[in-house]
Length: 281
Image 1: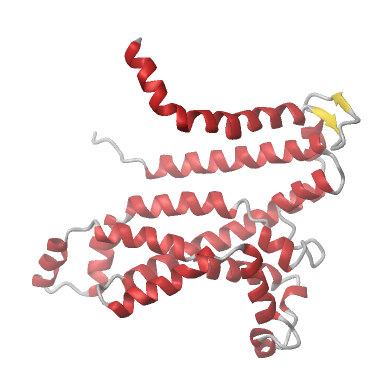
Image 2 (image 1 turned 60 degrees about the horizontal axis):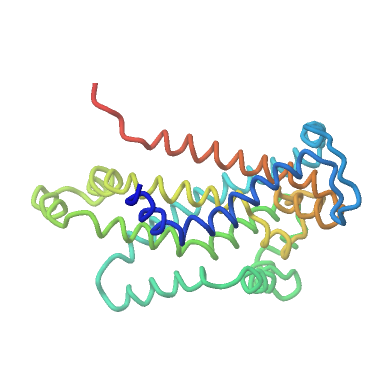
């Protein structure tokens, strides 16, 4: 019992904030979702799963879910592939490559407001460099607005997966590459048979973390397109925000948040299960 108490004292600095700021809000959100709860607190009628039934019949919710899935399945592979490519190119121990690593990582420390301001200038139909090249208002085009948000997100967030892949590359023994060089293995063979298999666990970590982060996209959409044009970029977190702070439906917004949490948890679970090592039979 004494050792248990000592152990609890060691984990308390993490456990207490986790319970207060994660577990309690999560349980509170479940409680809100079971009520017709006005944001001002004037209406708190218990409706059970009524909010979830409304969600199932809400076309705006399904549209936001489709947009979120579309963005996630576009952004996550782009971030993983670009981050891996940058890590492979910039792994060399030279000052030039160290400077380039710092440059590519620097964008990830910017706030979302700074990033969207930069890309609003780039995509401005009157004076933006990219918009002038393609001669179209990208953010007002329902087919180009979402890819533009993906490009903005990749430019902003590619430094994080790059750093993780760099850490994974440094864990691969140099002797393995030296042996491959003695065997006159091509660069493609080294990449396919040595580097990528050795980075399998790192790749899984990057995919899971990027999926969780990109499934919660909000700031870029709010500041670049506001959900438009014609709701083609309205995503789940933006729909949650509008339900809670524009329509004042806290119970309904809590139901959206809980489904968002369940979707991320289930997807992460299956990704981790697929990446789990198989036992020899």
